[in-house]
Length: 98
Length: 135
Image 1 (tube, rainbow over the protein chains, first blue to last red):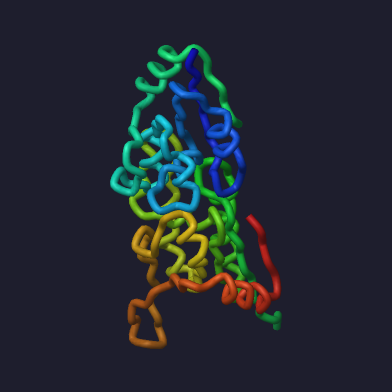
Image 2 (spheres, rainbow over the protein chains, first blue to last red):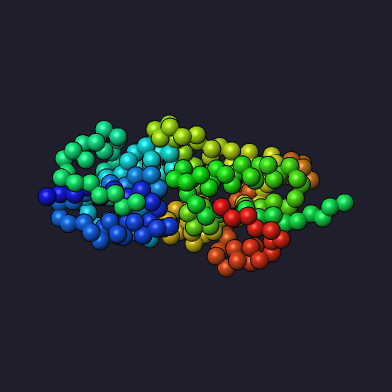
């Protein structure tokens, strides 16, 4: 069993990221979209929460917010909408931490 | 003869995820016509509004970030950015747009609009205003 955890809120405004990370199990993937992408910025106060997790970030949402790929935490994968669909398909369930 | 008041627009939301940032900008531009003493504060997630290089083609939303660079032409040239808010988010002033205005009293010299202030200094700036608009 694997789960895709989707976070779309800023980690500095809501606790969605902490809620998602706190419920992740081995083999799960975290996907950051919309304002959730800010969690992946290197040097940010919440960046440590991503440690040891498999994390993907939606590239279109990063670009919209002016966050360049070199600003991201190491190991984070930048994905497109097609990859988003693939992630949904390859995991057993999706959980959106709205 | 109406008295000039100090108006401050306080921005605490990221752009695009909600409509607050864009709405604030619209109100600032409308308000600029009333010749008040206008300033803007960017606190918490509000600092994200000013990041440079925003490209919204992939999310099919209007990129309103270039509008911030027009504020100087409306004599909106006091843009306070909170240092701690940037730091908590892994950002520095270099990640933001370079916003300028031209000072007609100084041979149209180009001057920086952004004033990087500490949280304590921001508290003083807020306390000094007549009217606060919150977005």
